[in-house]
Every structure is written in structure tokens, then in C-alpha cells.
Length: 404
Image (cartoon, rainbow, N blue to C red; front, side, top):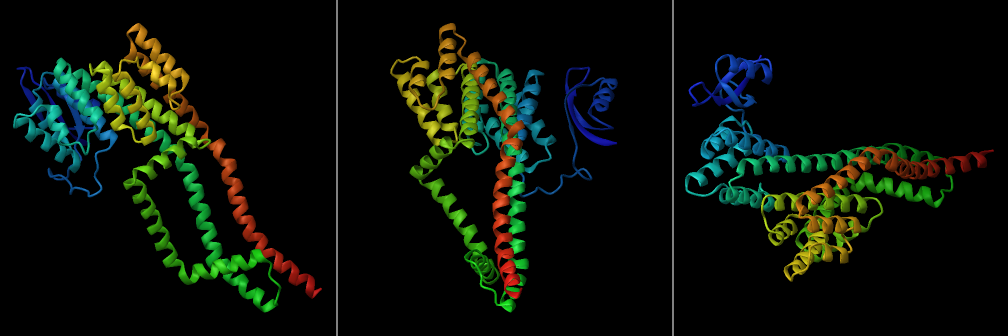
């Protein structure tokens, strides 16, 4: 048996909330129905002894958390629960420290007279400009519940897209990590023993073996300093690229030009651009405002600059499709579909179709990435291990020949 927090409506129409024991959510819903309560939100209670577990310092507001926030808030508002009460319910039922903190801040601002979008703006660390603008449009048009539903769908798509990319990169990262571990083991354990044997044999060592033994001795003597230096270098380069816009722009341009990574990065940005722009337009945001929001939300600065250039030409009276045709970032297919969308008055729907097209392409790529990357990794591993083996075997063979 587990405990479930619930919020629902009683027979008298009033909001009812509490905790119920059940095997799963379905049984909890059935038990509530038998007691005359129509459930609205049911969440598993992960607390111990009625008190929350200590807040984990690693708690963060993930895309999954944001999706849950949208779905729960949309369901509560659609069921007629007032906004402040809805936020309070989400706060009380959440077992994550970050979610409680965010909900508490939003609740205080709304009770102080702020709109939901205004309260979210104060939490801009967790909510993107796209999210805030869509909520503002939903408030203005009186369709906040539907907008939140759409945001939940968009957040879910973003979550799936990021998860697929991360999943595709997991395999090569694991293999490369194992390879680096194997090389380090050989260099600090095997090579020093072999070096002693070579010294006893008095064998003439080829250049590759000299390099190998020299590297091994350096790793044994200065390994800790080399590791610290490598970490410091990586952190330094990362910070330099983060703070210097020219360096960041150059790096992002290089990423888009790379053979395989560049294509997937472009498709990822196109999928996000199309879905975000389509969602904003369907929420009633103007094209210019939507383009401005998208440009500020796009991570790749090269792609972001292209969106700004497109927005500038649209501002001067050009249809959206025309500057996209002239851009080197947007494929012809995208500009053509945008043009059709503008002519038919279904630009938002056409953009969603473009997003779905690129999401399917990313899905197919991630399914086949193992077969693409595996041969490359095997070649790299073979070269590294082969160099070490040849450097060890060659002097042994030479020494044996001299003995004979």
C-alpha cells in the first residue's frame, strides 16, 4: 500500500483534499469515487511520517517538472479551481524542494496582485520567455487552461527531443570513457613493468616505445597535476566561450558545419524553432513578437542571429517566407512550407508540421546512431591500443632476435 495526495470535488461542489491509502493511482481514484469525491489531481505521497524528506541540494526544475506543473495547473483551472488555490495545491502536494519554492514565490506574487505571467517573469530562472509569453497570451484571451495544456505538450516534446539526443550520446561516451580508462591502466601499471624488462635486456628502443615509456613516467610522476591542469583547462575554455560572444559565435558556427553533429544540431534547432514559433502564433502572439521571443530562447547564437535577421526584414514589411529563403540556415523545404502557411492562413499549423518532420528525423537518427558511430569508435580504440601493443612488442622481438 502507498499513500496518495488528492484534490477533488465533493458532492456539494466544494474542493476536497487529503491523503488516501491505495495500491496505485487507479485504485485511489476508485476509492475516492466510492466516497463521493470526483478526483482532479492524484499524486503519490513520498513523505515520511507526514513530513517532507530533507530537500536535496541537487533538486532542480527539469523539463519533466515543468510539464507536470503545466498539466496539473491546467487540470485544476479547467475544473473551476481558482488560480491561487490551484497554485497552493501544487505547492502542498509537491515533494521536491525546488517546485515548492517556485510555487510559493508565484503564489505570493499573485496574492500581491500580480498576474500569473507577471509572477512567472520573477521566476525567469526556471521559465523561458516563450513560456511566459504564451501564458500572457492565454490570460489576455481567456484561454489560460488551453494554453497551459499546449505548453505541457510543447514541454513534453522538448523533453523527448533532449532525452533522445542524450540517449544517443550515452553509448559513445561510455565507450570512450572505458577506452580512456584502459589506456590509463596500461600506462600506469603495465608499461612501467615492461620498461624495467627493456632496461635489463638492454634492447634498442624504437621511437614509439621511447614516447610510450616517457609518457608513462610523466603520468606516474605528474599524474595528479596533469589531471588538475586538464580540468582547469576545460573549465577555463568553457568560461571563455560563455563570456566571449565572438568565441561562442565561432564555436556554434563550427558545430553547425561539422559532418554528422552539425546536421543533428541544425535539425534540433529547426524542430525547436518551428514548434515554439507555431505555439506562440496559435496562442495569439504576433509574428514579430514571436520571432523576438524565439531568438532570445534559442541556444545556438548563430541560429539566433539568423532569426533576428528574419525578424528585421519582416518588420520592414516582408513576408516571413522571403527572408527565410535567403538565409543559409533555413532549408528550402522550411521556407516553402512557411510560404504555403502564410498563403492559406495556417502558418501556426504548418510550423507544427515542420517541427514534427524534424522530430521524426532526429528520432530516426538516434535509433541508427550506434551503427554510425560504432565503426568510428572501434577504429579509434584499435589505433590507440595498437600503438601501445606495437610499441611493447617491437623491442621484445628485436631483443629476442639479438639473443638468437
